[in-house]
Length: 358
Ligand SMILES: Nc1ncnc2c1ncn2[C@@H]1O[C@H](COP(=O)(O)OP(=O)(O)OP(=O)(O)O)[C@@H](O)[C@H]1O
Ligand code: SF4
Ligand SMILES: [Mg+2]
Image 1 (spheres, protein in one colour):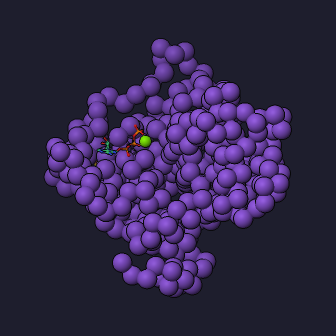
Image 2 (cartoon, helix red, strand yellow):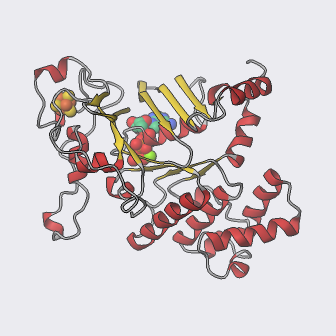
Image 3 (cartoon, helix red, strand yellow):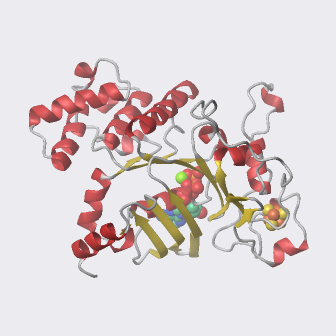
């Protein structure tokens, strides 16, 4: 391995003002006893500072593996091969020494996962979780760390922080625990927060509160967020941009308003149709897409969505479509030979009156 600190300085100097995150042709192959599984298969995306990107797709589409590879939790070794590149603020994640990577996680990249208990130690009080990370990364004294911990708990909407700080995780509800995990992730004011299904384990009312909290904190702190969900409805109204994943690949990506108004990939269209429509009685809601995603050990040739696609034609099974820009809307890209809603008008650019009104 090259001299990492020198490499870091060089890379940081090389791109002080580019996008915060660049993912370039990323491939994460997991070597299983049954063969090589291409969990992430050629994903490219960028994320600007302060931007929220929603990554959406069904179970098994590779969202979590993508998120974990971006963080450097998957590295090339006996069980996994990584190809392509992830650059975080100019730093090549795959090239970083493990110690430097760990520093980056606490300091500049925060993470929130589905189950808050995976991030919390059941035998440590809430205050200890927070003060440990503050003292380690910020070098605060015990008293300073406690003050900051109380501030953070208040910031994530935990009532009575002075009482809560002395409690153990099992003394809190799931929603409160997830708020603590968010407070931990925010302790060092990261540039990027990766939230992987942060609300799936919570009931519907609490889900909304936690998502609104993330949204508010993103605005307040100006951090970039990757919000991963199997539900397009979760990212609607929150993400600035959306990437739809299917079978390890991004099949459509656009400004959120553009994608919600006119999805061009049939899978994105189907996901949009699957958002529960609250105004309909439950028996009329479309909750799922017929069929199942492909076996990623042996994905079908051509378009991976073809076996489930109602628009599929002969060319779809012969060749794999690649991401291409929508005519006139270069930011709206889709991978499909027979796109839908191409003639739908794009939403007007936000004006001073409409911007920020989500
Ligand atoms: N450690 C592992 N060993 C073997 N296969 C794995 C491993 N982790 C993930 N996979 C496989 O990689 C593919 C992508 O998984 P991933 O967890 O990224 O999906 P996901 O989109 O996050 O799904 P979900 O919505 O259920 O969280 C799946 O086929 C999964 O079975
Ligand atoms: S390329 Fe063909 S099979 Fe794939 S999504 Fe488009 S129309 Fe459907
Ligand atoms: Mg997942």
